[in-house]
Length: 480
Ligand code: BYC
Image (cartoon, rainbow, N blue to C red; front, side):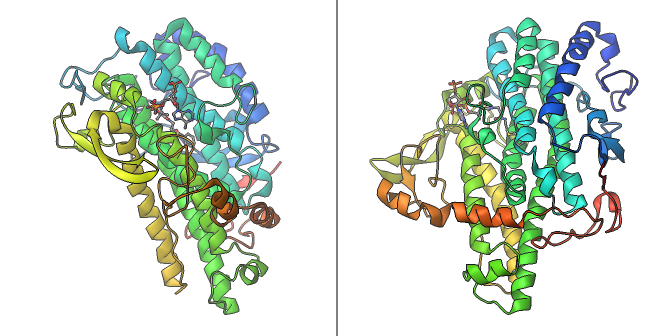
């Protein structure tokens, strides 16, 4: 079978020759009904019978893998898709740098690999659970379709990790695959594994912020795993990255269109002061200070996903050749990091200081720094919209010490500029930095669904172009 083309004949579309691997095929077919039950219980609420204009992969060739068509979500072709195997690929970093990439799990790294795959896998269904009710308040059919596209692809990313567990980890892999369907976002007894994936995504601005900030953590983590010496993990994550790009597009343009609408309405009404929140809200749009608070929230929650700045887990994974740095193959150094250092922003005696530490121990932070730079690019593009309308307001990323629950700053409170503040000051100022109950109520009041083709809710501007170049009034979802 040509690795580029997807075999759609069986129950599980794939480009890994499942037919030639009856044990894994049977294991996945056994897992499939449980997955569908999970999707029906926890996937988009109320839209399972609707026809959605979705994209599916028909080949993993970067030029031609996307095919668009109407499909009911439960009939979406979830499948196992790996990027093509690079010939003679070598392990790019760590103690085994330069050796042939592993096609099987190296025994000594089995537990470490399994843990990383399970954590990655756990985030995928979690996000679908978090976004479950958003279809009902979609600001347009275009946005609704994008939400569902993101959701089915997160479902596919779960399949991607489950394939690795079933194929390479025997009985414990099967158990982990089952457990991925049992945990639930926000559940008291069986929560998802990482903090941000147990938070709510209560409204569409949160959804856009989540796909901008949190899916971008997905991108960074997948990039780091794509460097893995364990070749099947590298190939799986490389293909996932092609889908991830669309999710971040949804986030960046979603927030961008929200800003655009706010600016348009402010200009029309002649409001120059962006801090005149009451006047701006009367226009039925989201004021910029509230937008900034939402960004503060999602950014800080996402920073926690990088783990501790200084981490022996991360050092071991790098040394083992299992998880690399962002674009490891493009970096020009020894790829072993045995003698270099890296500057870490830390808390020392109650003060924020920068300290050089062994680079191997600071890999979580290094990935986070690459993430922050990537976020900054998007924020600058948002600010260009504000400049275009001549509005005197700039969005900015808060300091990394702000509102943290993991790592160096988890034991203190800091303001958005990184000043450490007392608990007392924090509780007085918190609502200036993070969405308050009344901010949330206001945003909720705007979340009225708009399902007429080509129409958009008051608070968001239409996109510049349609999906698959469809016209503005295209019926992206035929609601059943
Ligand atoms: N919440 O040594 P440390 C995505 C735990 S998003 C709870 O710093 P490490 C997506 C940690 O597990 C990308 N616990 O850990 C986006 C450890 O516990 P144990 C998901 C946390 O391993 C949107 C202990 O603290 N993929 O794809 O260096 C939609 C010590 O910490 C947290 C990955 O994350 C937390 N935030 O770093 C859909 C890649 N942070 O084991 C999808 C795989 C840390 O000692 N994961 N802990 O009990 C990893 O690479 C790493 O496990 C982490 C943590 C970066 C998450």
